[in-house]
Length: 162
Image (tube, rainbow, N blue to C red; front, top):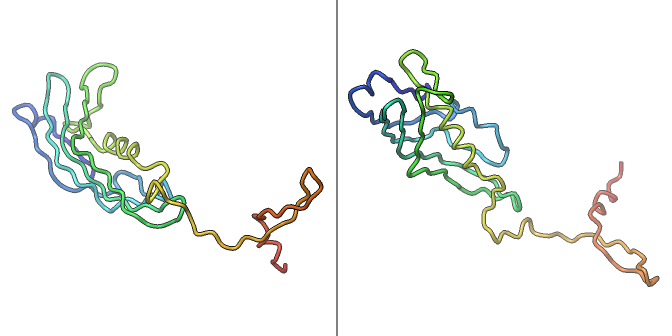
């Protein structure tokens, strides 16, 4: 179920929303293979009508499990918006299109969550990556005519019998 605001209820006072939104509503589960969002987004929001605008403020929390791009170790990297705010005009060029008496906050929440996703998840800034195995050496002739040993990235593949 999307996160809907009833505009009629805002005519007299602010609305407080608290609950959990299924991640399936945000359609973000397949965006990145190294970032795995939890099953629900927890929110605690206050919605106010300011003249012909909606102001949404509050807290949003999404647990996220990530895989390090260097060592593939799993680690937790939660997305927390302790002071999330969203300003939605009801008039003008950028106005929100209500669906009857309701405004859907889901696309705005989705956009901010996607922007907060780690683009290059690392378990630690000092992560060295996967442990290095014994790489095979290849002899190459240097400019001086002497042989030098250099690790070959494809040496293990050369050992395959196809």
